[in-house]
Image (cartoon, rainbow, N blue to C red; front, side, top):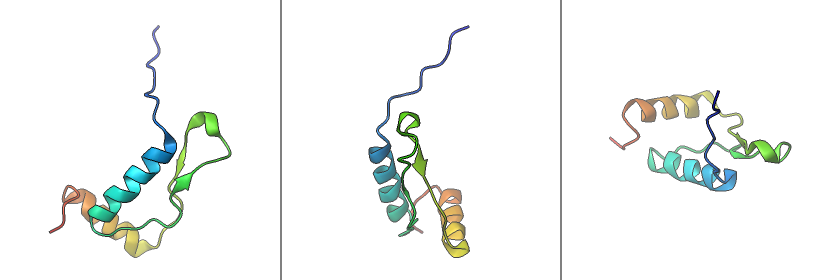
Length: 69
């Protein structure tokens, strides 16, 4: 059985890309967005915690496709 190879994505680039996209989608800021330094081989991005109003804003941006209305 063949295993699907995961793309080699730099977690720092991924975190910055998400940070920029969230800002463009409505000035959404996840203060705890960072790279997980505990498991570098897994290349994890920590989304962290956010206030409920920020999460609602994120959900609204996703529903409208990320564009400002």
